[in-house]
Length: 222
Image (cartoon, rainbow, N blue to C red; front, side, top):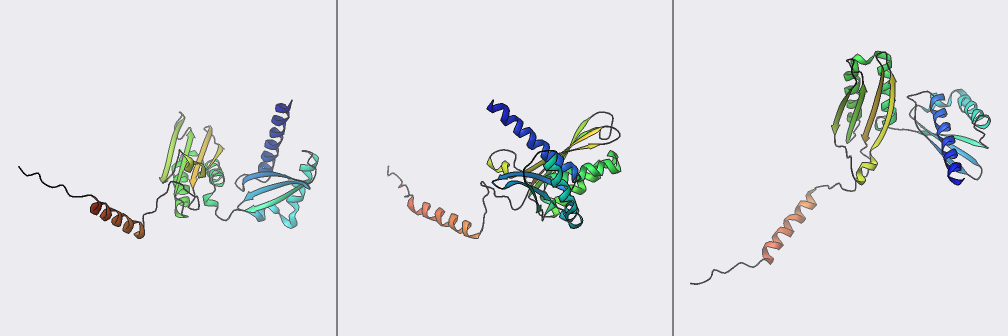
């Protein structure tokens, strides 16, 4: 019974997050977090366009709060806005931008869209980025296209700091799947080694000490 209640609880959370993202329009919302406090539920919406999300005098927030109370039976939901300062480092926003561009301009210019987004991410200072498009691009058969630049860790602990997201574009030829991965310059890499002047001097000193410590072999007299 406990497992069933946990599954039901997670399904309700998933439905709430999906409803919030869809109701606030795609391309504006990156993540939706739900936190439970003694005084009620906190719905944290991460967005790069807080003005469009809030609306005039907070009318969109009030409307969404009423829906969460009546439809999802939340006791006291409070919606908070988390302003994303650098949307170029947010994988979900970039994936949604690509999806909307493909739906608007068609899949024939998918390379232009992908390269333009990739350069936008890298020019903002990202350490690395990868874009994968899977679908009928541009032929009748589905194919996977990969666009990447910079450094992007895929295994180990450092891979956990890579921001990853998915999106779907509905085009006339068919559905296009989009995957975006971004390594922000603010990410902490545990295996990163910075070679500076101090390290070079320490290496030189250690090398000299090793040479002094090793005694020279004497030639054996015949």
